[in-house]
Length: 241
Ligand code: G3P
Ligand code: CA
Image (cartoon, rainbow, N blue to C red; front, side, top):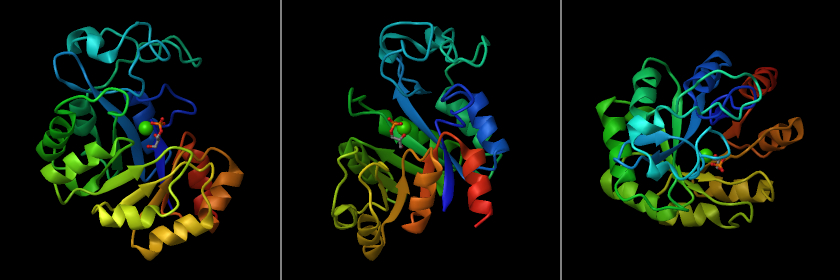
C-alpha cells in the first residue's frame, strides 16, 4: 500500500509548501499529492483553495493575482507551527525538485469550482519538460479535466476523484473511460467497492486516511495507496506489517 503525503506532510507543516513536500520525502513517503491552479497571468501554482483566505495572508481568488503578486503571499500565514514565510510554490519549481527524487506525484487539477482554460495542457507541458512522466498520476473531481488530459497525453495515468457519496461501480466506469485509478473518500468506502475496482484492473487510492482505524481498513481491503496528512505514521504502520 503506497503512502502519498496529502498536500505534503500537511499534518505538521504548512500545506502545499516546499517545506511540506521536503518533509514528505523525509518521512519516506512513496509519493506526494498536491493541487494546481492558474495565476492571473497563466502560471501553474500549487494551492488547494480557490480563495486565499484560509491559508494565506491575502484575500480574494488565486486567479486575481499575477505570479509575481502571488509570490509575495505567505502560504504559511495561518499555520499554527510558527510565523515563517513560505511562498506559494510554482509547479515548475516543484518539478525541478521532485525530479531529483524517486517520489511519485499525484497532481490534482483543481477545476471543479473554477474551470481554468489551459490548466491541463500547462501542467502536462511542465511534466514533460521535467521528464517525470513515469512518476505522475493526474486526478480531478472534474472528470472533464481527465478527459482533456487523456486527449493530450493518453499514456499518463489518471485517477477518478469522487466525493464522499462514492461511486458504487467505479471500476466499471473508470475502465469504460480509459482511466487507471479510482480515488474515493474513505468515508462510505467498503471492501466490495475496492474489489469491484480490482476486478476491472483499476487501482484504488483513498483520501484522506488520518486515523489508525482507517489505515487498517484500507490495508484489509487491499487498497493500492492512501493519501494522508501524517506520512511518517503511515510509513511506520506499513513497515510493521
Ligand atoms: O486527492 C485527494 C484529495 O486531496 C481530494 O480532496 O479537498 O483534499 O483536494 P482535497
Ligand atoms: Ca487535493
